[in-house]
Image 1 (cartoon, rainbow, N blue to C red):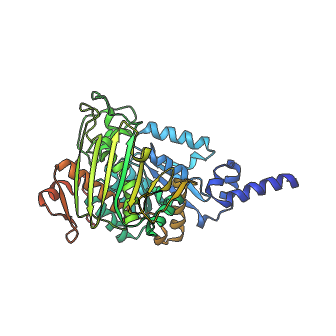
Image 2: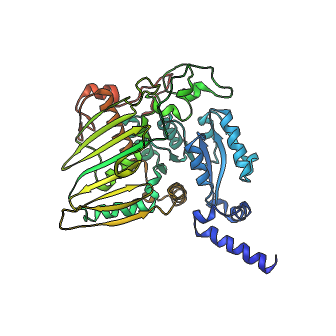
Image 3: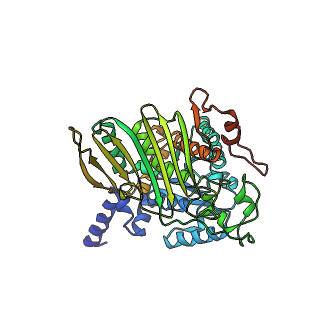
Length: 445
């Protein structure tokens, strides 16, 4: 190798060692060089379960990390498997070494898998995470971690019983500007915070048109896709991506975006469960849409000395503070407004102790950093270093479920922290646990 060629190579190599963001810009030859130089004991073999949407985004973020290898893929849709194998081949990954499955239990039986990424629909998360821990795998689980409060509780118990590393996919917890904003909230400079507003206005998502039932697409194992959900004829609205607007599989915008934004409301106020929850809303944008979950919803969570508000709207984008989404900590001295673009503090003009911080932009890729954090902890086994352990994921998923339960029951609900359930036993019996069908049962852990 000539001195110039070697110099260029070393410059690229230095960039690679400098961080994930720089590494993503380098060519695959440099990645291959470092993968070959990493000791087998310091490599992490990944299996991915559910790779159509966020599961694929999670996997590609993980593959930017030197020493991470994908050795197994699982999806109940063969069309998705074929597409992802082609995508991996374009990334110069040797796909001949990747085993394919349409049954996740078979993937979990593969002994050389160290960790799994779970990106399936919400109604599958609990079973797959619990079974993965039982099989001795570390787990990166997409949010919301569970589709019911009892599922969330059982997932925490499984992690504790089997002692595995489990990271919830709330990647905002790995972004610098989110952390900086919360430090400012905790500094006390905002004064007494009386209200925290969280909101998500999705103008790119419109209510679903009603579609007729249809034959199951070729290559799809629909029985495995349903799993513990109720048996229904195949309908395209209830399948890839749009499954999240149906109660059988998910919790609508409240559990889709709510877990991200309400998470930071809890972090900022350093609380976990509310005293009471009341929710109003409905299908106001298009009452005859196919969606089951509400397109318009407002939830009020009562805590001691302050309230948290969740507000969402599908089909419109003019949210609070001219932002489509965000968290606003409203204090006596000023209001801190935070979202994925950045954060700022707006002064309270009538207050003598004015505080203002100009807009501070987002500077990093939260998803890449979140996967990097997961892989580093898989190697170190220092679970305390996780940015979003399953306990945190379960807490915010449960809070979002509380909002949905208040909406579905059309009641103001009160939470009993001593018994860890609602004060109304009829509500507990009907809503605390998702209904399992087709012979599936949530394991006793």
